[in-house]
Image 1 (tube, rainbow, N blue to C red):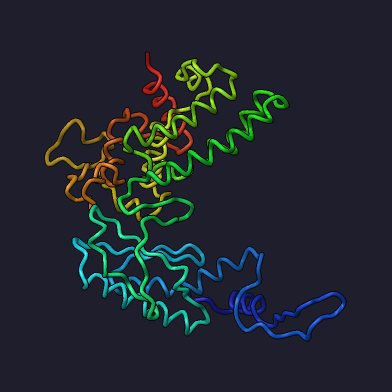
Image 2: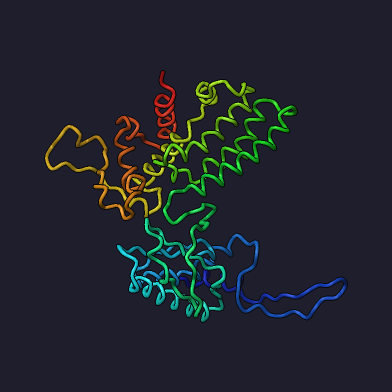
Amino acid sequence: MGLGGTVLQWLRSFLEGRSQMVSLGDTCSAPQPLTCGVPQGSVLSPMLFNIYMKPLGEIIRSFGVRCHLYADDVQLCHSFPHVTKEAVQVLNRCLASVSDWMRANNLKLNPDKTEVLLVSRKAEQGIGLQPVLDGVALPLKTQVRSLGVLLDSSLSLEPQVSAVARGAFAQLRLVHQLRPFLGRSDLATVVHALVTSRLDYCNALYVGLPLKTARKLQLVQRAAARLITGAAYRERTTSLLSQLHWLPICYRAQFKVLVLTYKALNGSGPIYLSERISSYEPGRSLRSSGEALLSVPPASQARLVGMRDRAFSVVAPRLWNTLPREIRQAPTLLSFRKALKTWLCAQAFED
């Protein structure tokens, strides 16, 4: 990492010379020195752990496998045109190297907590081709949870949407019991904290979902709007959403994608999103040359057939190019968000 001098001494003093003991009643065990690990609860500990784990990402990428590391949660992503023994063998070699590195560095990769998801329109192609970790065949799952999002083998997101709707309705029932004791402003705050926050979590994934699937979330939002405003069940919710300045579910998803796009274009977004979009450069001088448009890739470039129109590399440029020029060229993120929401509200609630 290139650390030395005072910085290295500071880190050494933080890690070395620590011990632990067990206390039971009035009795304490003898102190035992700590030779590995970082103190729990320290702000510095997560950063040091990430530094410690840095070689792991390099090992994984050496096999042509992409990875995402979230503290002690590691995700491997490997794409291939067809499910073959060669593709699985690459994963097996990668997993073996990961396990060896962890074992050598006082870490343990638990096969019982390792899950495999094959994303394909033909999930049956993976039968009999499960990756192996430390001699244990890892069964293919129909769905896995990634940072709180349920991903299924076809990326339909139906399990995720159903789980979010079910949990949000449960929270709404609890909030309904508090309604007699709260004013409208306080009630709206509670609904935002317990309900709409669930609808907005990772909602960029909901762009392009079939209406049948998205409707489950829209029903939650309508129920929340009625709860806050005290409207009757049969009253139309379009005016209620406009009154609350709430974008409908599909527009909220578009808002999130466009904000991510703005960040990616202005250097404040993650690199893996910035790499998915590029500026539109016409072959000859056109009036659109200075419009800050994005290039829309052909759908054939998206990896998963059937989900191409929902890929960020496709949907982000399409949505971005529909924005008025003054919104695309907003000088700050705050001004962009404000102008974008105003424009989307006009689109959603136009007479």
